[in-house]
Image (cartoon, rainbow, N blue to C red):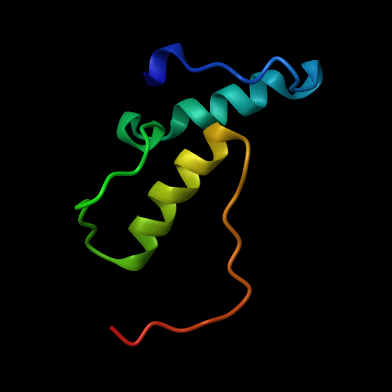
Amino acid sequence: MATNWSADPRCPAHLRAEVEARALSFPPAFLNEPANGEVFENVDLCRERLQGFAFTQGFVIVQTSGSMTQ
């Protein structure tokens, strides 16, 4: 999927190359829909994976505050 990904047609032309380069810089698995049972070494890797998918879908995940006790 990674090699075939392209920016949404509504993406401004002057940003298209940058958006596509960023999306294609993610590991290929990041472009697939998240699945139950995925395991990550730490919270940062999980967040990175979700952000990669979100970016290629046209949105972003924002955390304003919080803490993890586990």
